[in-house]
Amino acid sequence: MKCSACRKLLSEYVDGAAGGRAHAEVAEHLDACLSCRMEYEQHARLKELLRAMPDVSSRCDFVDRATDRVGASVKLWRAQTVPTGLACACALTVMIFATLVQMAFSPLLLDRLPWAFLVVGVVYSAWFYGFWAGMFAVAYATTATDYFFTYPHMSFLINTRATADQVALCLILSLLFAFLVTWLNPRLRRSAEAVHRSQVLR
Image (cartoon, rainbow, N blue to C red):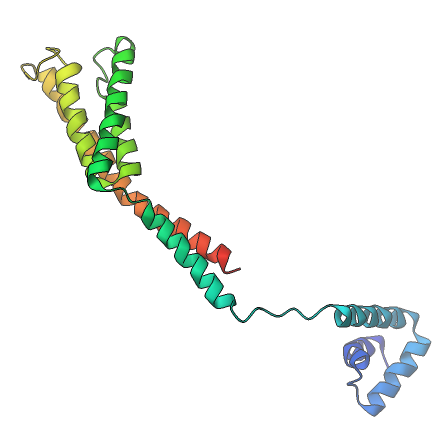
């Protein structure tokens, strides 16, 4: 018997599943071939190790436990939804803070970006507090830009083209980012939920 034929039968030989003639030929070859005998010993040791391993079986309630954990994660995501009134109140706090930051940086920004930090506040509000909080923040940002940061200051009067352009730009950017963020947020959450579910079910 050639080494190639012997090695093909080694697994059956170790398991005792080789036929009588094949078994005798493999045994005869192993007595004469050191290389095949070493490979046979490796097969035999591996077989012994596998037999010595404890029997691992999944608990009968695995599916129920996994389903409960996934359900709990879904409830956690849903629990993060803030009531509209509270969300708008939180957005108001964020926007007031953004207004103060904008005032602090106004000497540096001059009149080029009188709405920069207000738009950041809009993005933050829309991301963490939802669509209506984002829309509230858009209205606040547009109003604050007109009243505090464009000429004439402390007035809602729009009497120059530059003022109209800045207010319009603030409104457009705020709406764009608010819609983009509220569109992305649930999709990213669903993706994170799917990853969490796959980790639970491993």
